[in-house]
Amino acid sequence: MIDALLLQAAGVFAVIFAFELVDRTNFGVVALSARHSPGDVWLGAALAFVVSTTIAVGIGIVAIAFLAPYLVWVKVAGGLLLVGFGLRGLARARGTEEHEPSERSSGPLGHSQVRLLAFSLILFLEMGDNTQILTILFVASTRNPLLVFVAATLALVTVAGIGARSGEFLRTRVPAERLERVLAAVLVLIGSLTVLFALEPGLFPSFL
Image (cartoon, rainbow, N blue to C red; front, top):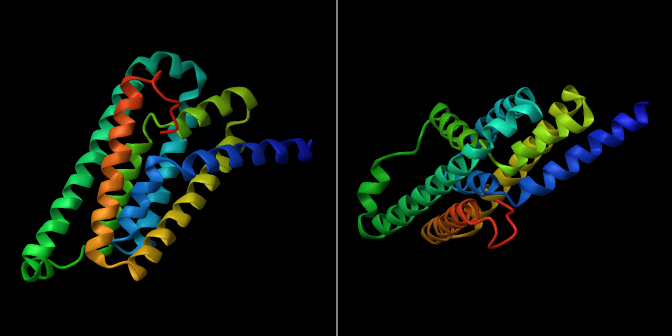
């Protein structure tokens, strides 16, 4: 009995981990951690994942049939949000080159501000995301919401930690202006693909 539960938990963890590792949400964590404290970003993102997983477990398989027509628009909104963040990053990088003294005077965000930013962004991006839908399906198939909640949350929090460390690694080894432009371009690309896959799911296999 215990072996079967552990096997189920490992399966849920592995699937959610794999999908989240290449998910738009993880790119958001990396981008935030490249500009702010990775610990604060991870804390905000981890709390957002706990909330989003709780929502997914609470919804169950019955509710997804009711909400399915609206999930596409949630994905579109999430994609547009990423595009907006990317364009803002590109403008910030250009502004840093042209007006470097004024950018420095603005100062970094405080710890609570970074946590709130990470929490808000990640929670919004997770709404209607593949990992959230998979969590709902796992609840319906295993009939064990507690097991799914623990395994899925651990997977998401672990990926958030990897993303936060990746952002910190990039920040210490890549010039700030170049990193800003690259990450912003990636966000614009991921956001655009998210919108495209949501509106035209038959064009490509959707991994976002």
